[in-house]
Image (cartoon, rainbow, N blue to C red):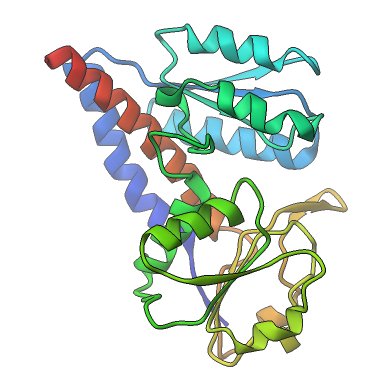
Length: 270
């Protein structure tokens, strides 16, 4: 198995971001601050919020976690929209009432939507950006490849499909109930369903590129969509169990936050 190691790439990006944040603080007296809003408690969410806090601390960005009661999230977001010292807001998904997801995402001010999940947004969605960075970092050219996306979720599948279509890259999206045995015909497979072990060895073409962007909690551990048998293959290029898309997703999120702060600095300059 050859690995697509996102942690290594994230390390280089983090060095560049740390320099940008120092410049913002010293030249423009801007202290970048990210606010995370959640109304749900589960191990996966807690892990991801801790990762964002740790990453922020490494590059001198403040990360606030706002724990709201169910039904109070909109009020928390509106208050953060009005805070000049908060340049980025993210709604940590999933929330307790998934039917409110769209309304709450759309309530985030467009210039603070650093996860890039509004219908109209100033930013690229973080996880699809991370997937593009990962593939580019390993020199994988998608042009002319047969590409499959498993799942059309709000965080990964839907925005990734949209991003690739804009770039002229055609991908087939497989959803719940589709025949996944057809994946054997695809050169690049990106899975983001949150169904542990969904992608089996028989579904993966020889010499395929496999990006596991799925996350679920199983026995207290975070697991992906790809079964362990796939990872025994020596002929494929695949993200590792840890350190694949995740680290670069966090990098992309903070890149968007830094971009938001740079826009503020440029407006002040004008």
